[in-house]
Image 1: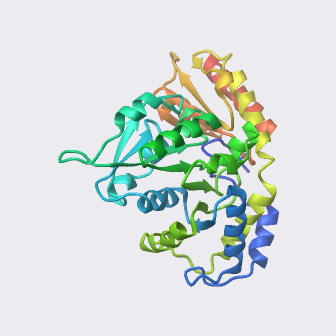
Image 2: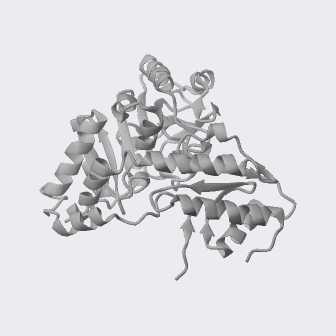
Length: 349
């Protein structure tokens, strides 16, 4: 049986044995009608951890972000997003299609918004422009190699938002990675945002699901938008049960993913044709540049695939590895061995 090292994403994990047991034993109701006890337990736990009034379970992070933006904007508004943010580049243009807003990208220093540029991009409604109504922060930042955004940056953005009557949304798909890497509790990040989204199905290893959180009034409206988008699920406690296991047992182990990512980065930095700064790897995402005479990024990914090591490109010159609970130390060493042979031009055996 082939052994695959799947480094494409931390979304590819399999449920733990405890999750399978929790699914089998979950108490169920109808979540659309508001009486699934397992979903209620998950939502209450998530709200407490984030320091928010109410949380809402949703099928995906993209839907969660979409709901949060929809709740805090009006048709024709403008919102400020970091130029490589996932919500802007990789979420099927829901900003334009669902919320009907104009995203205005802001320059950054590896994900940290340029505050002067943010201020320049603010817009007041006029005969030719829409009103800026919201700013979004991503933490950790996917396409800046899982960088953790400093807490001070949240304070700065919140101050500017308050001075200009803006809401703040936190795309915290991997917010618990940020907590483990920085020591800053997720509630500290969340208190500077009006709404928060995080994924249970990434590093926390649930098979499905994300959480959004905010005020009780906002999340009640969120239930309506969730149903409108097709996210009203019925006996969904069988999935929510995994989310409870994730929040109770899967957070601290994220440190192992971070350690393995740093190991990958340090070794990659020594390989021919690879460009990466290991000091820039905060969490579990490793993006490295490739300038090699034998491989483009796409060709290298294909060559790795043929050796049962799966990864993705993020640009014509960059490759991404993501560590997670189903990638162990031996998988990391195998990946590095195959890579070193490929880039050195040695035949694979």
